[in-house]
Image 1 (cartoon, rainbow, N blue to C red):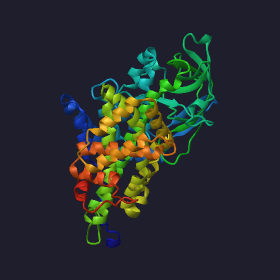
Image 2: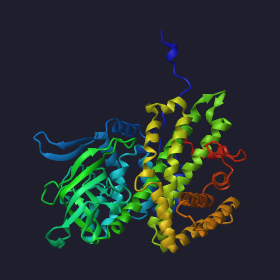
Image 3: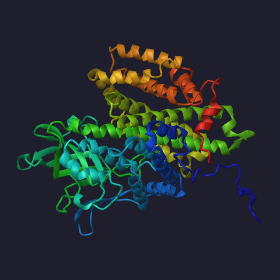
Image 4: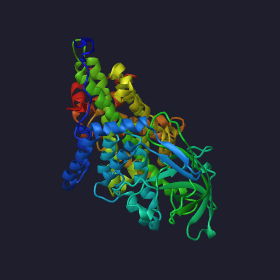
Length: 546
């Protein structure tokens, strides 16, 4: 006789076998908005294929396996030879291989490259976030390498290649390559000018060759083929390309001391490395290392925004899906006014993040001086705010699933553990806020570009107009500006998000965002939106219709 006590009822089915791209209205509309109509059909097809793969049971299982079987460090082979290799589960390689083959390291040389790549990164990151680290750094290394055309000629075709080759080989023997970055050190952290790694010219440095000696406290994805590294040369802090394998096939001295035991991002290897006479090639000029590598930093900061938008989108998708299939107190959860308020609030945060991320990607595709200036302010402001919002969104979405959300099988704990990463990586909150202040003080064109962008929505919503006016008042008062930098940057990000939503989102979304985030009609927790708003329409827009 069947054990009736174990009949399963009133449980939401798994959110699986769906198109992650097509189910995201904010993302699909942004791609349409920012893509040349002549290219749009091809870009949509490309993203639909990737979206179906990201929502498949296979990709979800790869994500689970890659995190349940984290990387292992092998410093020596069986004979005692130093090899410094990191072993990954096959699922990690499958995830990374699909990312590379889908063009997620190739934005700089194809039409609408940044928009299609940003959308793809947002889609595929929802399958698993950890492998996005080498994808992001490889993509971002291109502008830094272009400081030396001869190096770019060798490496850029490999970094943008759709071929993923995991073997450590000389560059000439690889069709595709991955890049990492080594900046921070124990004594300095974000203060990279405190770095002590020394770079000594070889044969006077005539060929741009140096021997590096020192350490790096954080070096993510140490299995990559090459790294951009900061070190102190005779002329000051400089940028160097450090390959894992030299042209003659011998291993460069790249000693992996240990892998970090991290809160989240567990599928990805983050390491401490030591250099001792390590060969490096100067990139750019001596003493201008920060200026050389800043293009890479800016691109990875935007990826922090995109990655956080992806985590928020997946959290909202899971929460709305659960609420649509779970009955409680006589009806579906999604129809209960209080739960609808929570879900709508979360959906607003997600849509605002996605809309801003794709606008910034489109600015990278633009060749206008206006958009280049906008990026200087908008990227650190967005990086500060969007990444800060990711953790509370993930935590509240987990709570929407109740006890089920606290269980590993739901996938929500992995989202929550991953959520603080992007706020820390590539400069934590204070670093971003101070970078905004630096841009305000040194680059007036950046502020003009920002105000022009938000001004395009002026007059469409009185709460947005009021927020812009208040922001201008804050910008005019420089007294004690550093101590209130976070407050200022938060307001800048919210005003920018509000202006974009007023221009492009459905009225119910823009109205709810402006009422709560800009108009002050909001509490201190999610689910405190004013009752007068059309919250049902906001939730329906965010829900995966699968």
